Length: 549
Image (cartoon, rainbow, N blue to C red; front, side, top):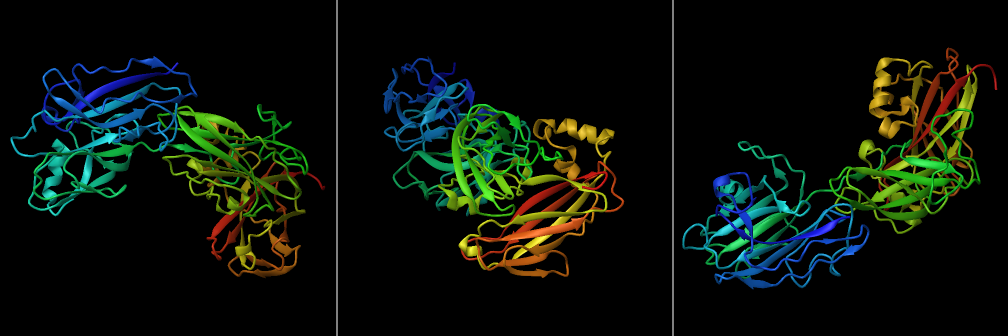
């Protein structure tokens, strides 16, 4: 059971002593935070996973037995679900109404309350001093990396801030630019690189209006000839690494029977001939997605399920959103509360994810947002969306094959657009998987691609030889078609709700039983009205059989 651990500490720059070293840049003069002598710290308490946590409110100030006055600087809460939260407002602490709720995950929750010791010496003589630091809100600790990119107009001050955390009082205003992520710190000593992303500058001490902080800008402006001590921290957060395996044949999208909202049934495979991988019209399939969290902390993510008709359409139906907590460094299978139903023709099963403090921040509100689903090919290995958009059929040596497909109902902005159709064809020999290299790749990728044919593993697929299946496009719905000299076609339709076309071709005469041909069809939509350019892919897998159909 997780528990909450409190620390009430004070920040004391350029003073040796205490159990926690601020930076490893120069240990003899590193900044530190130290326990406040005599202050009452809340006791450690056990918490239930999934419950909401509210930290105890610390005192706004405290005077120790020697008369030193400590004033509240900030509270940081790390270890809950998410990348950590920090506040400098004692009346608006993490977990309050203006923050997202603090949800107890699987990790220990650390509550660090940092105070400024107003009675401590300045550390550099009798005059005012300026102290600048970097703090990681996710780990609840100082960052050991260099964190200032430049200082202007006097950039010679940058090294002193990065090494010692102090800035000289200057006769002119100086603008300090924080790096995001922090800068790789040269040895000695060795400091591991950090991928943390800049969040905000926060003033802990200083006169009114100095330093100047503008929202979440990476720039901090320190006024000229300050007469008072200044302490300011650059706050960073470790980005969440939550993703789904992308592409148009994603192994992380699961369709199964019978439909269930709680357990997986018999999965519909990808790439199996004889109709086993065909999603039949009218059947209620269970719909699930495997979502991965490589972060070092528990993450809350929203997983949205979609039904996109047509085959290479852009618009479809919003089915369901499930908000789940994925433990650190793990994967979770998320099941939709709504079934996936093929209403006829080719229909795509699509999943998108939305996670705070990550690159995946697509938060749809309904079906109209389907045209904005992130590109699943932008980063296949760590994608913000995934499509199950493939079909497998048997084909016969030297015989014709055909594929009827469409663009679904076109959004109004694409209604008059000319849409390009291109093909990429590849050949998979019957004995493709019967060699040591393919076996090795399959073994390396079995966590993600263990249930798909080896030729669909991206590293192997990109090496497949080209094939020519003589694809020809003809219109089924009314419209115009133009064949391009460089290959492919350009289509437009009279009625945006009727967009079906047919692709026909021929299996090569030299094909052998057990061979497989991959026909990747891509529809290219131009920028039109409010909608940007985008491409949608569909894969037809032709498994060669002996004899005629």
